[in-house]
Image 1 (tube, helix red, strand yellow):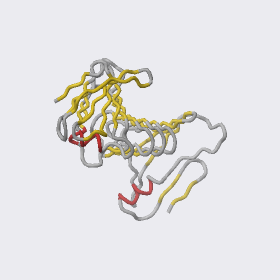
Image 2 (tube, rainbow, N blue to C red):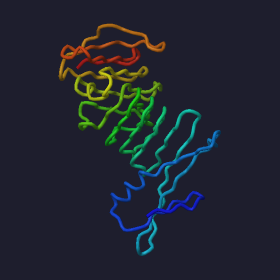
Image 3 (cartoon, rainbow, N blue to C red):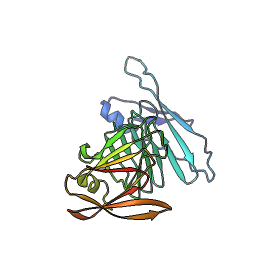
Image 4 (tube, one colour):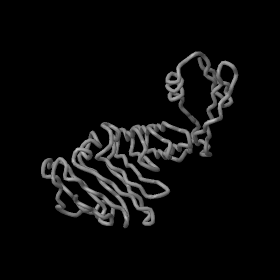
Length: 238
């Protein structure tokens, strides 16, 4: 059972398994109905008290509010990060295993490649590589459905932190339910390695999108597949 004291404290009591309590906590939502809400950051702290009265160390998660856009921040120990309706920014860290965005053009930030599941939901969603150091994200070895609802990848704008993306035809086609095109942003020092598994890729043209130049690749085995890579990014056909 649950009770709320009206001052910011929610208490859940009763016998239940770990998974049942996890499921209950994941249904908790924050709602600010003010016409001009206070945009100060909110911090949510979770503690667990067992039957003998032993209380766990607190685990925190933060929520920042922005006009028109919500930004969800995962602290250490937060395994699941969920967004809402609208253009959200989900800021994962090295402990964030699952990210689930809702409708809207969302940005999902990852600090490394250790995630279990990411779903951008409906809209034009961007996966952003945001680690303190560069890392390699290999789409070709991800588990089935580990990455869904993604229409763009941003390897970053910092030329001193270099990231690498590895991709093939199957992984590209599995990214989005609405498009067989992936747009890859990036900067000098970043790399995209394109595997011939599933079909050979060929650079066929260049195009300008929002003032940026991209090289366009198509696949011999699926003419609907298109890979647009920023011209600043090193492109390697394996």
